[in-house]
Amino acid sequence: MRFFEMLLFFSSACLLALLFIFNQRIRRSALLLTSGAGSIFLVIHFLVEGYRVQLLFLYGFTILMLMLSLIDVFITRNAVRTASRIRRVLGRLFIVIGLIATACFLYVFPVFDLPAPTGELKVGTQVFHFVDPTREETFGKTATGKRELMVQVWYPAQAGTGKYAPFIPDTRILRYMAANYGLPGFTFQHLKYVSSHAYSGAEVSSAQTSYPLILANPGFSSSRFLHTSQAENLASHGYIVAVIDHTYNTFATEFPDGRITTSTTNDLFSPDHDYRTESGNRDKLGKVLTGDVTFALDQFELIQSGHIPSQLKGRVDLGHVGVFGHSIGGATAYDASYDPRIAVGIDLDGGLYRLRDREGLRKPFLFMNSESEFERLKMVMDNRVYTDAELNRMGNTREWMDQVTEDKKLELERMRETVVAGGQFLYIDNTEHLNFTDVQFISPVFKMLGITGKIAPERANSVINAYMLDFFDMYLKNQGGILMKGPDSRFPEVKFVTSLL
View (cartoon, helix red, strand yellow):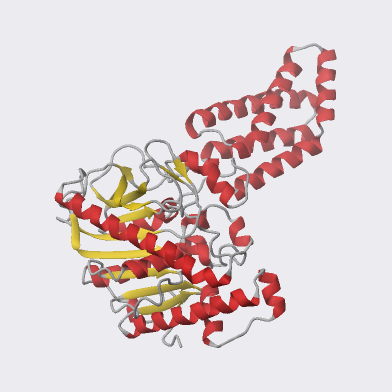
């Protein structure tokens, strides 16, 4: 809850108390004073913090009480009695319920603070629009018919000036984000008030001549914005981090000309589709996503050389490139790591695709899983068979689940080959799939519903960031690597897995 929101809510609670406690003579003056203060808080809140839908009752109550207080003081006794009757009609119970509902809305939909980066460097951010002239768009329509990408970069910056960039600058997409979770379009409008810790267009830090590049990939119906805290943290430790909005695989992406694309791909892998096309669909999408990473890396070579104008010119260390991703973005990170230009990668709770095309990856790679995903993989390792009751609860058919299980066995074989070649596999206790994104900060209800795990969001974020940084430092900077040696008492939630099959 923001400062003037708290003052506004406190003044409303005082107004409610005055209606119950004091005698009429004292109450009249106190109501006028308190409602007047509340109205001042309301105006300042609108001007400084901005309104939001969740506080509509509070706004109405504050204005109503000011009006009735003025009537009490300046109008005749008959009008006073009329005002008293109005208050009785409105009902004190209704007011109590309204204030409780408002308090719940403020709790469920907070204007939260993203975790601050832990590095010593300031962070800058810049957005690029790339068009690939060599690839046709196959999942929807674009202005040119070619594959287009929005890519946001976070990088080490000199001391920034002015305000931080907003967490989600493209506010028109917020209603699509709400729809993605089955909520009314206005639900997440307050996120436009959430701030990042990066300065737009800030000058690149002079602490180093160049910085390693990390390419990042969100999951199904996700967004580049939902990996802001991870990107900022890595940038504060001396990395250039480029998060790719994979067009038509995000809940929404806004382009410079105002077009907005939404997801057309995330339902391709549901049980409603023919299970025999599962691998084919995933591989078809995967080929496009991997192509996006390859193309983005090509563009950074042009940025480095100055062929694409950017203050990052000459500052990108293309000899040290990493990649990471979440969910299918993790599979993208794995598949893209076959590119010889990419030295190291991390898969955050994602499966794999294009499993039959080649052997396991033979370069440093970290699989970091949620506890729930590891339990599912363990069932496959143990050859556990789902009962009919379990399949019914999940809404899956046995044929579909059998195909998924076969794919998972092949995934495990590829993971094992990579771990044997020097990779790592670990999972984090009490985490769920979305703990690997900034979704976990949006509402505490997600934790109550089990959408995110029992672990505190701030703790999950700090653990994930620590292990990501240590792994990238080890292979892209030739430093760190302490956490990769095995269990650490500072992070008891992290469990290393040494045997995958």
